[in-house]
Length: 79
Image 1 (spheres, rainbow, N blue to C red):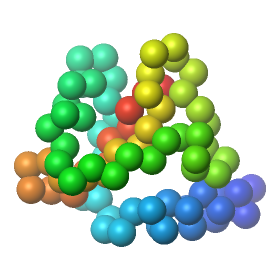
Image 2: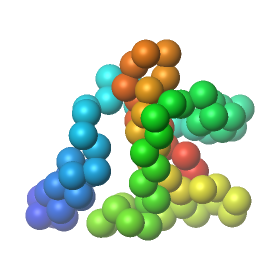
Image 3: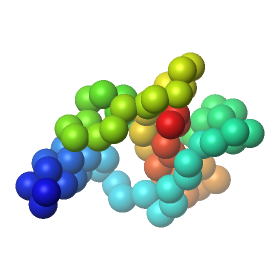
Image 4: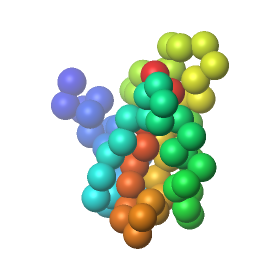
């Protein structure tokens, strides 16, 4: 189990160059917030080793890293 977590963490470290201050789950009513995030780096769930895929039809299934209100954020888009 620890090896699986390490694989996922190593992949995300390579993709995310600056550690976000805040994480946001974009649920019902918050989906449009993604358009306010600047300097976005989108990482599809399907590309992240051992990461669960989005199971809700119509949900994007992405981690989005960027800047919101001058702070580094990570947003989960899709469940």
